[in-house]
Image (cartoon, rainbow, N blue to C red; front, side, top):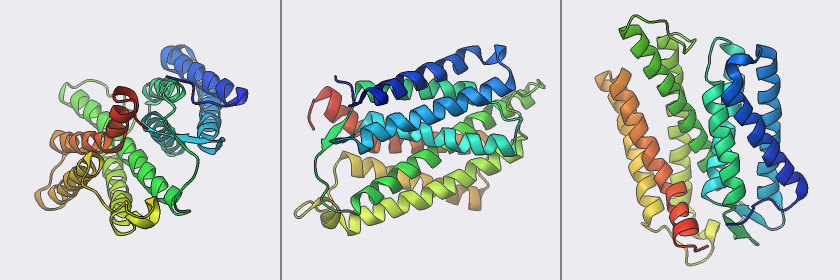
Length: 266
């Protein structure tokens, strides 16, 4: 276990982001709306600097924890945009808590060192995969808000999601559809150009990462078909979304966690 951050400014950015996120998660009810927006923006920027230090440093590092940290950062980016369109959406306290944990994990578990990259197209392949992670994670957050809103309606209680249920459902599946497109592109590129991306002799292999990723793709495909043909909605659709997201999480982050932390292999 070593710090992933090579420069003092990277370490300072990670520490600042973790503290700002933690304060937001714990003290949101006592903060004004302007203070919340300012602290969230500051934490988001510091988080981005910490990610840049790990990815663009010499040598660059990447692994399960940086992947999770970048996923959370992307979800926060989506939330920042949506909060402008739907000011009543209230999920920053939960996302801030996740952000704090993600930044700390990325600092403790730096991942694998990459001294050389086999293909200049490999970062694009990684970017597609991480972007699909972020979109599905955003879908999970919206699915969680949708479940809370639906439960409040059934109990005739006031919902604290802040957004109408049908709007949350529509947003959830927009993210699922976009994530499915990017995941399909990631798998297709990995299958068709594996040796170009990773080097000679490194063709497509049915390892743990591949199996879980394909299972996740099939689950999301089933979710979209079930919604279009069978009218899946509400809790059933959200549960399938959770299942697919869990499989996708195991596909890269889970496999890398086993290699890096349990087996201590690069």
